[in-house]
Image 1 (spheres, rainbow, N blue to C red):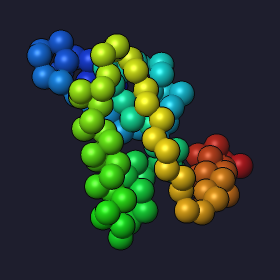
Image 2 (cartoon, helix red, strand yellow; image 1 turned 180 degrees about the vertical axis):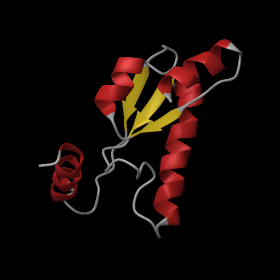
Image 3 (spheres, helix red, strand yellow; image 1 turned 90 degrees about the horizontal axis):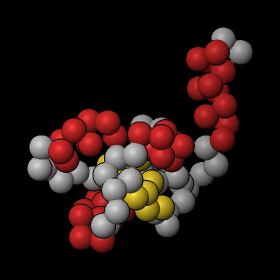
Length: 98
């Protein structure tokens, strides 16, 4: 999505990404991005918490005014409520056959 965001920006439309993969986001350098250290596929947090999801959305939208340098990644201050290391390891194992 970061590459798409850059093309859209070149057309004059401002973009902001909410990312759960900081290393990948850094590689593609979208114009502005909010990094949330949550499991992949959950950039707005756990389901059933609309107030928290709204905070993340508000943080992302605030980047339109706050970010002046292209490629900036802002780290969100939120933490996933549970350790998701086991879930990530399980997913990686399924992808690699291990």
